[in-house]
Length: 145
Image (tube, rainbow, N blue to C red; front, side):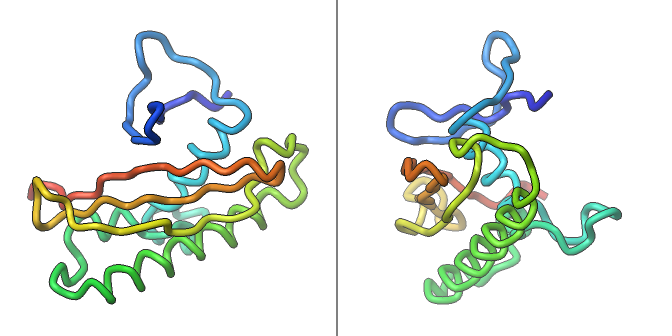
């Protein structure tokens, strides 16, 4: 069973947590969760799939030049497109409803986090095969060492 570990509020802000009681992730919620977790996954972290993941978690740890907006957007775009390709491939032979199948991931916008100059606010468009669009707002800040 896939537990719902990401919460998306009415404005699209994504937070981690189970809420008051764990629930099963289904439909659009599952597709968003799987997509964002794939984007965050660092390649090399899974010995069984060493190249899997978009690497956003590594960027979260401060491994990018915060002074170069073009590099940030380029790195994010590359990681998101890699995640999109991997997910579509992973789902190809799976028996999933169209609401759980990814069609496209893309960056809607990137802005510097006003409360943390080393972080940024990322808006990601997640589109399912059912053509349903969700914009997820992800706040990415470097982890404390």
